[in-house]
Image (cartoon, rainbow, N blue to C red; front, side):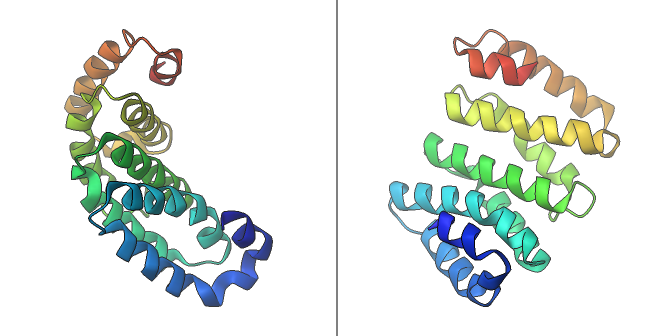
Length: 165
């Protein structure tokens, strides 16, 4: 489905509101696998939304994904974090909705999660914020993040250790 949207590029614009509505509905589904698929598909179509100048939908997805950071299943949470990374990349740190400061406070407890996918995507999101908008977050929050990243360097998976650097 993503390949179809990538091939259509700007010609997909008339269909995007309906596709996004279905994805929002699927994010609210009771089955974890359906929510996982929806989060992964959202992450894949974010660049298409950017090409089609659908910034309002991008901001809306940013708010929705922010609300789903309390997901109980780690695979779904990892995909949600990945989709949120894509939203931050597409919108930029300054235009992000909700503000990066609020998002960052929600990320700190998630950094303690020891699931591989969650750790990697959370560290990637923190890295994007560090590169593009480090001044937005207070120094105290950065110190907390640094201590969590030090713990991540002890992870058994090389991908997580590489992301933490």
